[in-house]
Length: 409
Image (cartoon, rainbow, N blue to C red; front, side):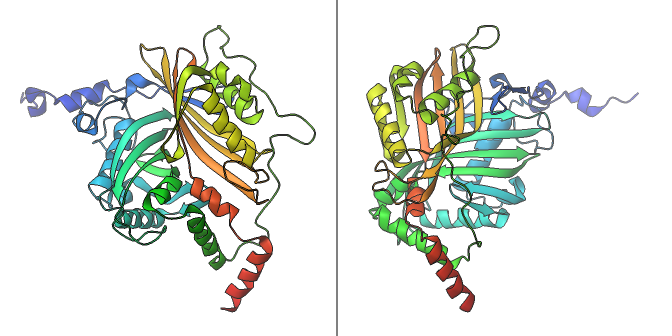
């Protein structure tokens, strides 16, 4: 009987590793907001360079419907980002995005694959030498084969082309971007993008307030709905004090529970304004890498930043949209991503200057490193320029006048 040639030669290393690839383990939290990824199923980024990660050929994770070139979900995110942005493979967007993808960009959305392509091309026009370094990818999987990622990126770029911020300046910029993706069978179906545009504008030498005003005026050309604002978000419900739903930091067996820890911190410190409890969640020498390349170290500076932020929206409510947790094996440590949104009225003097009385949506994604049950390092990203745009947007009556003008044009 004739031997099968493939059997005679033996399987390739890639084929052998594919056979050993693990099915994604799914673990959730009772709150429905916290999700986990099993680190052993992927090659984590940590401090690895893309030069090293790109050489990986070991298939460690089964991903139904994904192209065979990807070893695991982290590899998928790192590789397509590199291919699109640094290799200028814009066509990869057609291979890896859903035609009706929604991209959430702070207080507004982009819709559809064409918008993603357009946004990418315009960014590369303005910053043609942009280099994106992936600092970390925190991920999880759902039972239906949907994967979620939170990708933290730092970029260096030179402003050689005109942009939405203004004419080309020739100046260099460094900035952080954090992107959450929902991916199903090789296609990104939803994306949440947060970029430190305020810091970009400052480095290019533009006045952030003037840029924000110009961006706000652009909304005059878009006829709004008859009513564009519904309800008022506050951290209190009527006369009741803010809610505290997490009353312990351990699980039912008495072990440290990362989900409870994170939710408890945001409930107590961000929503209830117990800024004195910063010391209960942050280590003594903890550091927060905030927007505009600002480093905050220790209890006093962390408290000061939070006080300033919430002074602008003193009655605003913090909504935690998603928490993703990856344990770091052997270190009693966790990498965590938190996607959050602060909604409220700009009615106080604080981080964003004099109160305007405008409703604000401050949308952000934080990455945290938890070590020995305390936060040791955090990367906080939100778009301060988008907040300034909301502050300087026209009032509803001016919107109505703009609508009439638009209709008669």
